[in-house]
Length: 94
Image (cartoon, rainbow, N blue to C red; front, side):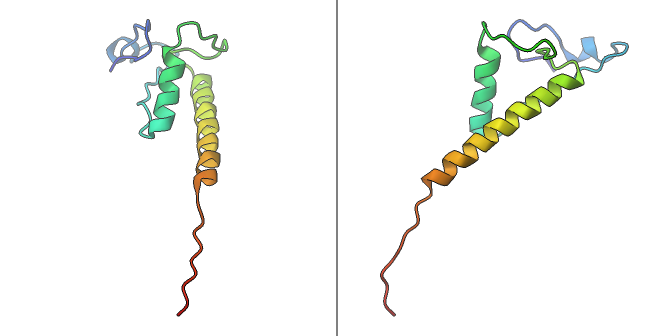
């Protein structure tokens, strides 16, 4: 398993026995909108990430940052979906 981030050279065999650090690898989300957001973030070469975020997700703080990003994306998607719902009224007399 390799890190999908461009320029990151970490892979499972290399990082599984690191002393004091656990490297976590995450699959891209199944939700298409969230997956596209992840791709936009990781593909941006000029992206300024916070200091605690390491691209190959080495520390727990990184997982928390990714989780927060996912939560924000899902909240945005929910609000968009609510606006698209159309209530249909019918004039059926029985």
